[in-house]
Amino acid sequence: MTSSSTVVASTETTLAKELSGKVAGLSVSGSGKEMKMMIRGMSSVAGSSAKPLVIVNGKPANMEIIKILDPERIKKMSVMKGAEAAAIFGSKASNGVLIIKTKRLRRAEREKFNELLAKGTDEPVKEPVEETEEDLPKAGQLTGGEVNDFSKWDYWKDVAIPELDRYKNTWKFFPDRRVSVQLVNKDKNR
Image (cartoon, rainbow, N blue to C red; front, side, top):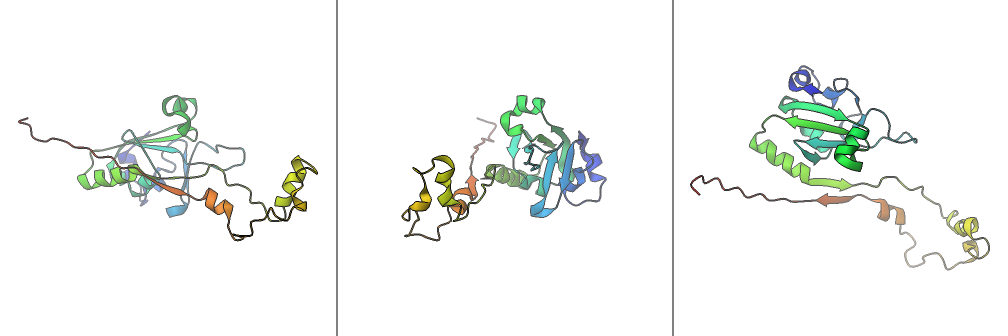
């Protein structure tokens, strides 16, 4: 756990870089769009690390918040991983959880946070291995032998749309936007 006084003492310009080495179990590499955060080791045997779940003031957020959050506005920060994180936050916490509690935010900051909390992207868990044109006819040979031997079939190719890239269309990112509206009556006489 770290506090704003520890974070502000650093000369780094981004919150993520300031937290590196100050929050136990959190390592940060890269900067800008290439910035990656990892909590206590890699989450897969292949060595790829997935993003941790970020919770700001009790709400799930995306990594963009880390890039814009003013270090002076942080009240408390903690990191969770393992069974403790999974018990509280479920399967989304399999790569760890970064919990941020901020000081009272100014109105402009609250609006920006609410906008970022509602915005996100759905990303594929694993990129597929792209098969070449030579590999596709052999697919049937591996499982069904002569019965499914696609190399003997000339009509399996899509003649109408030869340049269609099914992998790019299937595995691209799709933006996800959620909007919430809150009405508050500030008239104390009612």
